[in-house]
Image (cartoon, rainbow, N blue to C red; front, side, top):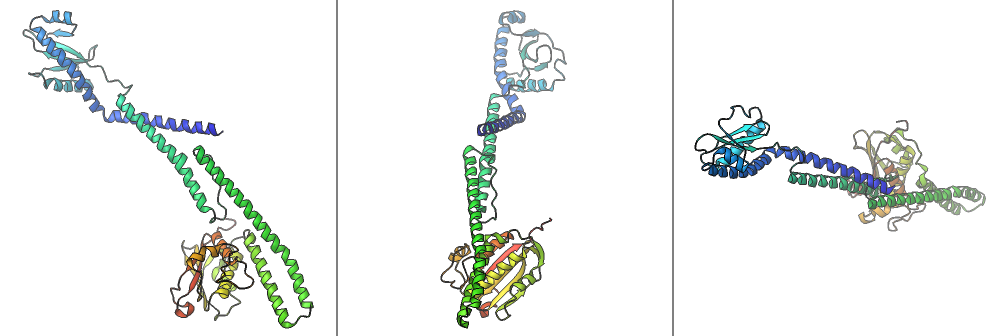
Length: 442
């Protein structure tokens, strides 16, 4: 199958090269027709000049009929018809060019008349002592095929070059560009698309096949990890519920009971994050909701002193549960590892009428630039910044996944441009950007 496809591609590019070669040869012959005609007449002029001089030298000793019989030259004695070659513009032009060539070497300049008789050519007047004598110089019509060898060679070179350029552009450059885009999507796109694998050279097709095989392995690994996380989180729910019930019946001291309930709440928070990261929101339908109300609900448990809200009214099509959980994770991280005061902003963003930008500011030291990419990876905890209970390194990873699902991402901001966070001293911010998703029935 591969050899058949390669033969078909070679045939197509070969036909394209031959077509370009023939077309370019015809165009070159058309553009250089006058120059080629001059070169042809110049070569003919040398032969005619030799015959004219030889005939004029012989006419001083021999009569024209005898000279014609002995030498075989086509000579004619007497006057020629006035309209011998009228109407043939090509022949008239050739006669003019030939006369110019002869006049450079002969004085006086001979008369040259075209003739359209049985033998196409021109009559050249000779210097004769008694009566006018004419020498016939045949000029056959220029052949339409084959073309001039040099023009044919130039056309073949041009056709071969075009065929090679098409081959590299379509069979090498374009598949490699698709492979480059596919590699760039790995790790950023929710589901990178497999490459067609039907175009390109054998080496390029092997690269595409290995890339597609890598995507299949990554997909299987992601499915296995999601199933494992979802299974663990689901299986822990029942034991946690039974533990909470037993603690309430154990009769522990109030301080010990509060501590045990806090540990159970941390475990439940971890299992809920496992479920969300394992793809619990992938099938959530997109809805048109007012984002300012959605964010206000996510921050409903905090008062204005703990979290200031600066929300622009926006209507966008989003996954409300996933987006609300992502914002809640950002708020939770800021409360655990940041510094007061906190401020949540909502602004419109490009594209017009579709984009949104959610920024959470806090007055803490934040995450350094060299640790930012690590912080976005799942199950990564920055020991210098994280030490709270109920955290497993999935907060920012879940927020980044939700942002990518909405066509955006997470950004770190060095300082507060409004100077409102951290008492006007600047602060650290995380921006979640995205845009409206298509409605399910769209």
